[in-house]
Length: 382
Picture: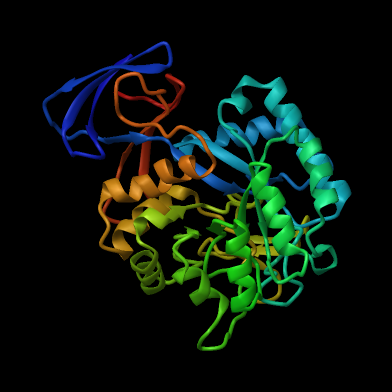
């Protein structure tokens, strides 16, 4: 396979050939209205898509494969299926099914390097817990987590928790020692509890600025504390619904782009028509006309996201002063590094997980083609 595109990192036109799943050659080419080419997006937080949640007692390997392939249209070549706060029966079923899907399906295995467990060790307070069901929010439990990790076949790569529980520091140390990245999220923790969590090894903030009270103390508070600690990388949902443009700009400037990653936080109802949906794993939700997904009956509490990471890529450039290369690194290179995966780079010998796209004057990045392990899985490169 051979095609021509503009490198996202240099802006130069390049003729690229792919052989046996890897980049075989890169040479100079003529620039004539070409799409950009970059490493495929790596999304660390996807709860489901197209009406299918991962928190589902009827989840099957076949359903996991359908969701996984749906990521192709948005340029996502790797993602972490994410299970959210629920009872042990639900979470263990989700973990077992995801692991079985990775074992049974090449299509899933090459797109899914691991899983994200967002909860159930979350704050019980309204606001911080967001749409996570109150009855299932609980303190960190190492023995329970070990059982979930066993069900997952060892594939849990990220666990998001609130460090406001006395059990949190010890749980974090043991998790990090076992190779799991610990993220702080959905928390009402004090400054001392945030610091204790980071001292114990927590290294990420899950969707910083969300999963929070509608009103918080001016200072100190858990957003400032996480923003200021250079040991924490912040994941950000930049879909215009979760964070205002000014907040995105301040977060990126405060953290620096090196300490920020883009996530979609897609939920199971993402991609569905507007309207109210009942009996989801987090209760009744509503998709508004503008694409926002909220807990039904109000407008304050978001229930995850409905827009793919392509929106975050385009919005990041519009809301801040970062360039295309820096933005793509936040959507691809840094997320891969965080979970211990070798990031894809535009160099000979690299795995050909690539996306060809345009950045229009408005709206999301437009994906022309997605290439996974050297195979075109969406669109066409020519």
